[in-house]
Amino acid sequence: MTETVSNQPVLDADELLAGIREWVEIESPTTDAAAVNRMVDKVQADYAAIGARLERIAGRDGFGDHLLVTSPWGGDGPGILVLSHLDTVHDIGTLAGKLPFRVEGDAAYGPGIYDMKGGAHLAFAAMRHLARLGRHSSLPIRHLCVSEEEMGSPTSREFIIREARRAKYVLVTEPAREGGRIVTARKGTARFELHIKGRAAHSGARHEDGRSAIKELARQILDLEAMTDYSTGVTVNVGVVSGGTRSNVVAEEARAEIDMRVPNPEIGDVAVARMLAITAYDPDVTLTITGGLNRPGYEKGAAIEALFQEARRIAAGIGFDLQDLKTGGGSDGNFTAALAPTLDGLGVDGAGAHSDEERLYVSSLVPRAKLLLGLFEELS
Image 1 (cartoon, helix red, strand yellow):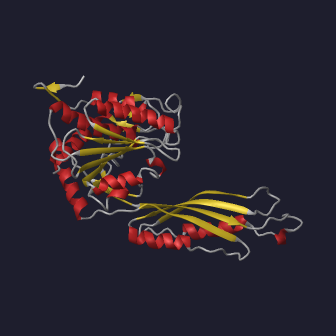
Image 2 (image 1 turned 180 degrees about the vertical axis):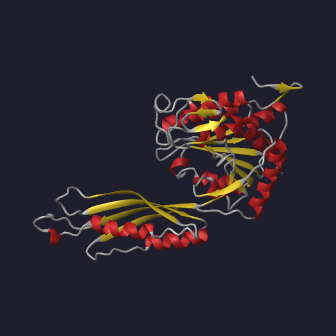
Image 3 (image 1 turned 45 degrees about the vertical axis):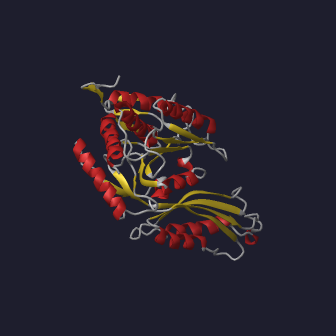
């Protein structure tokens, strides 16, 4: 039950954790649209119970549905956009296997509990709390829950941008970092696929006739990794490689998957152009590279700094010193920062995202929920 003070409900850690557990125990890996839609069903039902307006957006391309929730107050004007994702990286069966829900001291474990069902639920709980108190924020609150953020938000991006264009502020419930810090800048993300086609030959009898795709790839890997420049914030990682058929055959084909992170669009445009301009060492080998920017980078400008300072003030009133950071990881906040002041990492504190030790810290639940509640009530 929710505790009350002078007959007024207050945010309660036990209730928050129980609600998060209900969401976590509906496993929702991105690649299983039916599973994600079961999660959407639950969130839709929870919001319907507090009278929120609901728009369910049908999924496509093998992904689940998206859900746009609007507060039952505030009208249709510019407001506060909250961004969350309901998909996880954990496969069905993780809950019954390597990562069951459990509480050990201050840590609560479960698939997606930190990234980011915990944070998504705190946004719901903050809106529910306003409804319980009979109070309204001065701005409408729109909570967009998407189904495929872990895959780069390919089908939800248009709706994220649509909603950001009519938002005064954007709050992203990705998990907190490094002891509760929020995120005010993120690197952009680019992804590429490199395919090399050489010429097969018997490696013993006719080695000279072959043109090794693997040899060409090895040379390219050294050049690609050398594009990393910590002084500008560009990093390049060749994360997946494959090629060849047998040890006694000169490899006809090889391929690689490449991840690039860039600090801002200006540096990103140059780095992406450089990547797409690579050429083969061996003139008898064909090199094809495809890809580009998946999420643009954003930096903390004056508007984001002002929004952060407002959040710091609210946090100080709750009893903690809110700090921020820039991270190399991408989120849906990358799409919105150029359109409206964006604060990211407003979810739960914890650790172990995407691992079998994923956990949130129970002690963070009430303060983080109060921070979201304070932003809802005081942003105007």
